[in-house]
Image 1: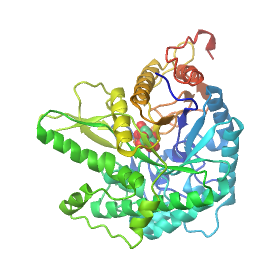
Image 2 (image 1 turned 45 degrees about the vertical axis):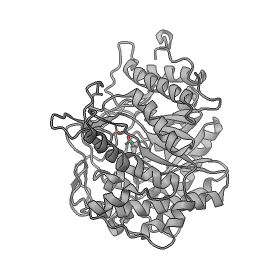
Image 3 (image 1 turned 180 degrees about the horizontal axis):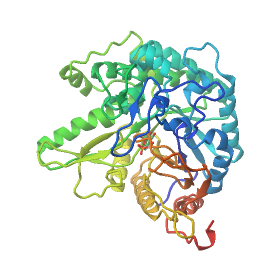
Length: 490
Ligand code: BG6
């Protein structure tokens, strides 16, 4: 069993979680910039009015804006073939409403892309990774208003034109299906129920499913238009969708659990990718909309846009799995942007996410059976507390175990016949957590000396996993064994 030749190994990040420099060089405020720090126990908050003395992690993050050269060099040292990052919409159009783009923002991504290309690292760019301009949130409730489609298209067209010839792979919206959850309303769609008062991240106030699903519709149209126009601008572009894939099993063989699980999968795991990959709304949504009193307003022409703007490839994040049950004796567990029923066969991470490498093989087969499109896993990894050992290095063998097991299962999926073309593990360099705003939840191969109490000098250090992943890439995933770090101490 082996990975195909040319397999795209790399890592993934998002602008709001690593760049910092939140108001430098003309950058505007995004939805993530009004989000406070939090922890596993204390939910983050969105504060539409900045609170004096409150900590906003995206404002400095890991200062990548000033250190990107050092970071890309470290990625190159690991042998990255691809680097997934997002362009922060608010660096290009600070409020979203300007007629002309911000040249300094464009120049930053020119430099970043050139730096990747210098090392033959293929850029994989997410157009919108939880970074909708806050002015659009205030004026239009993000994608709840149709006008936002045009604002997004202005931005997408600007960056497509600017970076054509240097970038081939694009993703439209990060974890678009997060919009099927209340928690995804503000982050993924810009739908914030109250734009004057603070709102909890976990339970956003005034969540209105009809508004959210309408916003999702506009996001689908925007994504499809980006695919259509992107292909016109550069026929070599490959433009993909990006979903949260959280494998879901029925907890018991009770047929009621099976149906519940199927319904959950329809809404959470398949609805958005069915629209984006097949180019049309799936029929099971008719019943869901009817039973939830949701009326979606579509304009003439939307059906054709969705049909013509289906994506070129499918991508997803994969961290954990859940169960579904109709039975009462269920134990609730946490997970990426949502919770579910615990699986007694699995163990959880320090943040309670249930680790399930086989669930990744299962998911990849399901996805490929459904769409027969190339697939990339563009997020996967273990958020963990890291401590330096006596030799000064972080020996993150738990992370290596997690990654190894998932890579083994990807290999199985390739052997099953899945057209898997790449893998970018999440947070290849430690960054700020999306759900809790912490530095303490680390994913990286590269340790960043920055801590939740504000201390730290942002310096970067290689962890044990850095050397391990380098070997994995060098051998195209053949050698997943441990590395000896004796001679590699800092
Ligand atoms: C995904 C997001 O939800 O998971 C990332 O696309 C996020 O932005 C990642 O960071 C891991 O989640 P967390 O909450 O541990 O940062």
